Length: 81
Image (cartoon, rainbow, N blue to C red; front, side):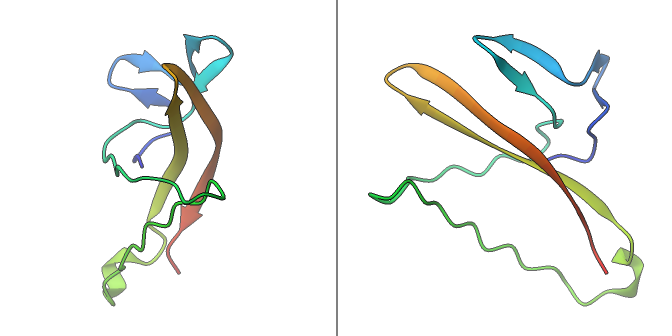
């Protein structure tokens, strides 16, 4: 999860990580978890009821590491409100 989809520090996004993997989101917060037998992982995220958060944006992208091979999903933008 990141605050930007245009830059990660001084690096412009998307960033080519090789093997067809493009990092579309600044990795400002990482959530680690295991997948179910169906490949599903759930990360509940509570958003406080605070009017100051109205219109706030975050960018999400999933990554998997299986047998030493990194794979990244497409990214999605979310907006509070």
